[in-house]
Length: 456
Image (cartoon, rainbow, N blue to C red; front, side, top):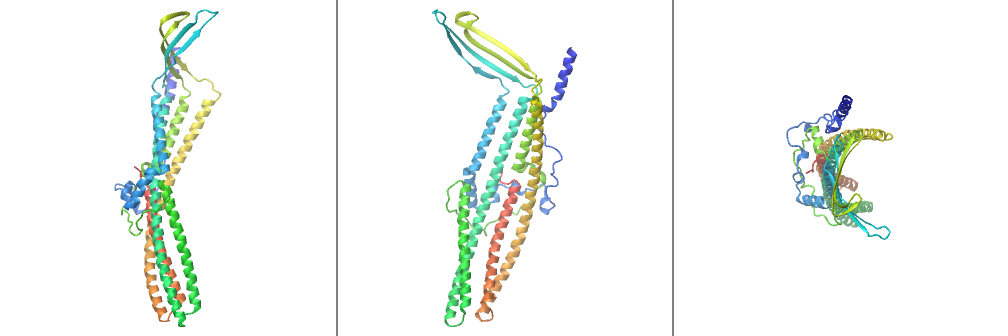
């Protein structure tokens, strides 16, 4: 009989070894092929862009002040901090679950029969209960809570990184609108002066009425575009204020042309995404939590040992009422082994295993999404620089074209339509240069965010 008991105990211990294993990152993840082959992605030892503190990434002191204010007052950031605090409290409770629980439950009764003297009895018991963690139920619960805490911290870092990137993007969007408004305002001034000149020429018969009406029509179109830019500027300021957690107001800012970024744009090796990207860390901690939940479902098949006891002072010992009283002690050990629970334990284990596989798939997808974001942002950065250079060259050529058209128009060797076309092309080219500068800034910010930049 003893041999059979020993065999059963050994089988139980061997089958329960899995529930005491710590989570390990799964193999076969698509890490090495996350990044496409580029010259920027081959650096393994040097500092990468995502490692730079945001204060070094964004050198505009006005933007730095806005980011600091946003980190302190943004409602999403404050919510993320509160969720981390909740997870810390849950982890503390999980750690304390290994200790016995103590309760004090004083009781008192008054008993009277057939007019006899009322009997007063009382008890002052202290009860204790201690669950012995034989098969890792409490341990896996604690490990799962630790994973939840790391998951909430990763979420906080994801909110922080995204908030910094969004503030920077909105700030540079304002700078772009400022330059576009300045170009539009200067163009309007030139256009109004041109119409006054044409009106003077019309009085002496050197200009046609058709050219004047066409010039006025274009002026009205430019004024409408200028008004639309002003609307966009005001809306951009309001959006940024809401993001900062403050009421709408004017934003103090610099100029887009003065912005500069570190020359370092190495993106490092793909493995760094496993530790730098907060959303990837969050997905992995979700997987770890699901792993420990599965272990808890396994441990539910094994016995549960609980020790309980009580010690107290009472004046009622059996049927005799004594005063002042005496001590009363008790101790109980209970072992509960599930035998038949209508299939709930098997169903719970199956559900937990499926949840673990779902979390694994979500983790793999998070890696793929991270790789795509880095690839897109890196190529966009390189393409934006090339596009900016092409439009700057185009702008220089169009400036010469406008100068030539004006000289020819003054001498009567060119029509007003040719001058109008040259100026319109130059205006579009200048606006494209401003837009390209913003696109370049935005692409660098997105690359920085995609590499996990901005985390503490």
